[in-house]
Length: 65
Image (cartoon, rainbow, N blue to C red):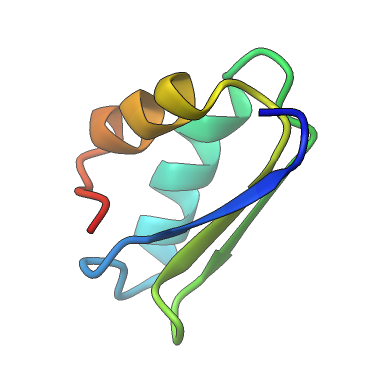
């Protein structure tokens, strides 16, 4: 996934969610940007492998809708 992708994560509700997701997704090889939007409940990711990014969001404790 060399381009950017946006994932809808309905359980995002606070700064703890932002930090947990950001911490896990930034560990993914190739990821250059992570932007978690609490209001829109989205995670915008640039770079990295899509399947690995999804696994990282899951590892943080969140489901992608």
